[in-house]
Amino acid sequence: MALDILVIVVSYLLGSVSFSVLFAKLLKGIDIRQHGSGNAGATNTLRVLGKGPAILVLLLDVLKGIGAVWLGTWAGGWDSWIAVSCGIAAIVGHNWPLYFHFRGGKGIATTIGVMATLALYPALLAGILAIGSIFITRYVSLGSLIFVALTPVFLLFTDFAGPVLWTSIIIAIFAFWRHRTNIVKIVQGRENKIGSKAKGGNRVV
Image (tube, rainbow, N blue to C red):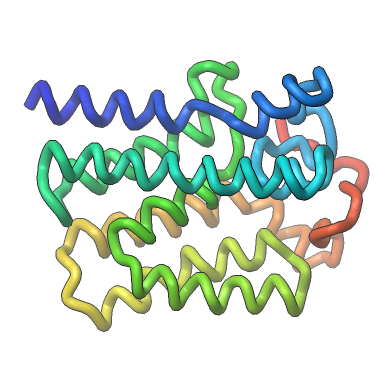
Protein backbone atom coordinates (compact mmCIF):
# COMPACT_ATOMS: atom_id res chain seq x y z
CA MET A 1 0.00 0.00 0.00
CA ALA A 2 2.80 2.41 0.89
CA LEU A 3 4.56 1.59 -2.38
CA ASP A 4 1.34 2.25 -4.34
CA ILE A 5 0.95 5.68 -2.77
CA LEU A 6 4.62 6.45 -3.34
CA VAL A 7 4.58 5.69 -7.07
CA ILE A 8 1.37 7.71 -7.56
CA VAL A 9 2.95 10.70 -5.81
CA VAL A 10 6.14 10.33 -7.85
CA SER A 11 4.04 10.17 -11.03
CA TYR A 12 2.31 13.40 -10.07
CA LEU A 13 5.66 15.06 -9.41
CA LEU A 14 6.92 13.79 -12.78
CA GLY A 15 3.86 15.21 -14.50
CA SER A 16 4.42 18.52 -12.73
CA VAL A 17 7.59 19.17 -14.71
CA SER A 18 6.28 21.72 -17.23
CA PHE A 19 8.75 21.70 -20.10
CA SER A 20 6.84 24.43 -21.90
CA VAL A 21 7.33 26.80 -18.97
CA LEU A 22 10.97 25.76 -18.52
CA PHE A 23 11.92 26.22 -22.19
CA ALA A 24 10.19 29.60 -22.40
CA LYS A 25 12.13 30.76 -19.34
CA LEU A 26 15.38 29.36 -20.70
CA LEU A 27 15.09 30.55 -24.31
CA LYS A 28 13.27 33.86 -23.95
CA GLY A 29 13.14 34.63 -20.25
CA ILE A 30 9.34 34.73 -20.31
CA ASP A 31 6.43 32.97 -18.65
CA ILE A 32 4.71 31.24 -21.56
CA ARG A 33 1.45 31.35 -19.62
CA GLN A 34 1.43 35.11 -20.22
CA HIS A 35 1.83 34.77 -23.99
CA GLY A 36 -0.09 33.33 -26.90
CA SER A 37 -3.06 31.33 -25.68
CA GLY A 38 -1.65 31.26 -22.15
CA ASN A 39 -1.56 27.46 -22.15
CA ALA A 40 1.59 25.66 -21.01
CA GLY A 41 1.61 23.03 -23.73
CA ALA A 42 3.17 22.09 -27.05
CA THR A 43 0.71 24.01 -29.24
CA ASN A 44 1.31 27.29 -27.47
CA THR A 45 5.03 26.55 -27.44
CA LEU A 46 4.82 26.33 -31.23
CA ARG A 47 3.06 29.68 -31.33
CA VAL A 48 5.46 31.43 -28.98
CA LEU A 49 8.83 29.66 -29.37
CA GLY A 50 8.67 27.92 -32.74
CA LYS A 51 8.77 24.40 -34.16
CA GLY A 52 11.93 23.04 -32.55
CA PRO A 53 11.00 23.77 -28.93
CA ALA A 54 7.39 22.72 -29.61
CA ILE A 55 8.43 19.30 -30.92
CA LEU A 56 10.74 18.82 -27.95
CA VAL A 57 8.01 19.82 -25.48
CA LEU A 58 5.57 17.44 -27.17
CA LEU A 59 7.97 14.52 -26.98
CA LEU A 60 8.95 15.19 -23.37
CA ASP A 61 5.32 15.58 -22.28
CA VAL A 62 4.49 12.27 -23.97
CA LEU A 63 7.43 10.65 -22.19
CA LYS A 64 6.05 11.82 -18.84
CA GLY A 65 2.95 9.74 -19.44
CA ILE A 66 4.95 6.74 -20.60
CA GLY A 67 7.26 6.93 -17.60
CA ALA A 68 4.40 7.20 -15.13
CA VAL A 69 2.62 4.13 -16.51
CA TRP A 70 5.83 2.10 -16.48
CA LEU A 71 6.41 3.14 -12.89
CA GLY A 72 2.92 1.97 -11.95
CA THR A 73 3.40 -1.22 -13.94
CA TRP A 74 6.59 -1.94 -12.02
CA ALA A 75 4.66 -1.56 -8.77
CA GLY A 76 1.39 -3.27 -9.69
CA GLY A 77 1.69 -5.06 -13.03
CA TRP A 78 0.22 -4.45 -16.49
CA ASP A 79 -3.41 -3.29 -16.71
CA SER A 80 -3.49 -2.82 -12.93
CA TRP A 81 -5.26 -0.03 -11.12
CA ILE A 82 -1.95 1.23 -9.79
CA ALA A 83 -0.56 1.50 -13.34
CA VAL A 84 -3.53 3.49 -14.61
CA SER A 85 -3.61 5.60 -11.44
CA CYS A 86 0.00 6.61 -12.05
CA GLY A 87 -0.95 7.63 -15.58
CA ILE A 88 -3.81 9.78 -14.32
CA ALA A 89 -1.53 11.27 -11.66
CA ALA A 90 0.95 12.37 -14.34
CA ILE A 91 -1.85 14.06 -16.31
CA VAL A 92 -3.08 15.82 -13.17
CA GLY A 93 0.48 16.93 -12.48
CA HIS A 94 0.81 18.38 -15.98
CA ASN A 95 -2.44 20.30 -15.62
CA TRP A 96 -1.81 21.45 -12.06
CA PRO A 97 1.98 21.38 -11.58
CA LEU A 98 3.24 21.66 -8.05
CA TYR A 99 6.37 23.52 -9.16
CA PHE A 100 4.55 26.22 -11.14
CA HIS A 101 1.75 27.42 -8.86
CA PHE A 102 -0.66 24.73 -10.16
CA ARG A 103 -1.02 26.47 -13.54
CA GLY A 104 -0.16 24.05 -16.32
CA GLY A 105 -1.46 22.77 -19.62
CA LYS A 106 -4.38 20.63 -20.68
CA GLY A 107 -2.63 17.29 -20.57
CA ILE A 108 -3.20 15.91 -24.06
CA ALA A 109 0.43 15.09 -24.87
CA THR A 110 0.82 13.34 -21.53
CA THR A 111 -2.49 11.58 -22.16
CA ILE A 112 -1.11 10.31 -25.47
CA GLY A 113 1.85 8.84 -23.62
CA VAL A 114 -0.40 7.24 -21.01
CA MET A 115 -2.91 5.71 -23.43
CA ALA A 116 -0.31 4.61 -25.99
CA THR A 117 1.49 2.70 -23.22
CA LEU A 118 -1.67 1.17 -21.79
CA ALA A 119 -3.37 0.35 -25.11
CA LEU A 120 -1.15 1.01 -28.13
CA TYR A 121 -3.36 -0.04 -31.03
CA PRO A 122 -6.63 1.63 -29.93
CA ALA A 123 -4.68 4.79 -29.11
CA LEU A 124 -2.82 4.62 -32.42
CA LEU A 125 -6.03 4.30 -34.44
CA ALA A 126 -7.64 7.16 -32.52
CA GLY A 127 -4.47 9.20 -32.99
CA ILE A 128 -4.47 8.70 -36.77
CA LEU A 129 -8.04 9.97 -37.00
CA ALA A 130 -7.23 12.86 -34.66
CA ILE A 131 -4.23 13.90 -36.75
CA GLY A 132 -6.37 13.71 -39.87
CA SER A 133 -8.90 16.08 -38.33
CA ILE A 134 -6.10 18.52 -37.42
CA PHE A 135 -4.84 18.51 -41.00
CA ILE A 136 -8.34 19.19 -42.29
CA THR A 137 -9.56 21.75 -39.75
CA ARG A 138 -6.25 23.03 -38.29
CA TYR A 139 -7.90 22.85 -34.86
CA VAL A 140 -5.50 21.10 -32.47
CA SER A 141 -8.11 21.21 -29.72
CA LEU A 142 -10.63 19.38 -31.91
CA GLY A 143 -8.07 16.71 -32.75
CA SER A 144 -7.29 16.34 -29.06
CA LEU A 145 -10.95 15.81 -28.24
CA ILE A 146 -11.37 13.31 -31.06
CA PHE A 147 -8.41 11.34 -29.71
CA VAL A 148 -9.72 11.08 -26.15
CA ALA A 149 -13.28 10.40 -27.33
CA LEU A 150 -12.41 7.61 -29.76
CA THR A 151 -9.85 5.77 -27.64
CA PRO A 152 -12.44 4.31 -25.21
CA VAL A 153 -14.73 3.49 -28.14
CA PHE A 154 -12.01 1.42 -29.80
CA LEU A 155 -11.14 -0.16 -26.47
CA LEU A 156 -14.67 -1.58 -26.31
CA PHE A 157 -13.73 -3.88 -29.21
CA THR A 158 -10.62 -5.24 -27.51
CA ASP A 159 -9.86 -7.50 -24.57
CA PHE A 160 -8.03 -4.91 -22.50
CA ALA A 161 -8.73 -5.14 -18.77
CA GLY A 162 -11.38 -3.00 -17.09
CA PRO A 163 -8.95 -0.52 -15.48
CA VAL A 164 -7.66 0.59 -18.89
CA LEU A 165 -11.15 1.13 -20.34
CA TRP A 166 -12.41 3.01 -17.31
CA THR A 167 -9.28 5.11 -17.22
CA SER A 168 -9.75 6.09 -20.86
CA ILE A 169 -13.32 7.17 -20.09
CA ILE A 170 -12.21 9.19 -17.05
CA ILE A 171 -9.47 10.85 -19.10
CA ALA A 172 -11.95 11.67 -21.88
CA ILE A 173 -14.38 13.33 -19.47
CA PHE A 174 -11.48 15.16 -17.87
CA ALA A 175 -10.17 16.38 -21.25
CA PHE A 176 -13.58 17.60 -22.41
CA TRP A 177 -13.96 19.57 -19.19
CA ARG A 178 -10.49 21.10 -19.60
CA HIS A 179 -11.35 22.05 -23.18
CA ARG A 180 -14.78 23.47 -22.44
CA THR A 181 -13.80 27.00 -23.51
CA ASN A 182 -12.21 25.62 -26.68
CA ILE A 183 -15.42 23.79 -27.51
CA VAL A 184 -17.39 27.02 -27.24
CA LYS A 185 -14.87 28.82 -29.45
CA ILE A 186 -14.95 26.06 -32.08
CA VAL A 187 -18.73 26.34 -32.24
CA GLN A 188 -18.48 30.14 -32.51
CA GLY A 189 -15.64 30.01 -35.04
CA ARG A 190 -13.24 31.84 -32.73
CA GLU A 191 -10.87 29.00 -31.90
CA ASN A 192 -7.21 29.52 -32.86
CA LYS A 193 -5.97 27.38 -35.74
CA ILE A 194 -2.53 25.85 -35.74
CA GLY A 195 0.00 28.26 -37.21
CA SER A 196 -2.07 31.32 -36.32
CA LYS A 197 -1.43 33.85 -33.59
CA ALA A 198 -3.63 33.73 -30.51
CA LYS A 199 -6.66 35.96 -30.65
CA GLY A 200 -7.28 38.41 -27.91
CA GLY A 201 -9.03 37.11 -24.82
CA ASN A 202 -7.77 33.57 -25.27
CA ARG A 203 -5.37 33.65 -22.36
CA VAL A 204 -5.84 30.78 -19.95
CA VAL A 205 -5.59 31.61 -16.26
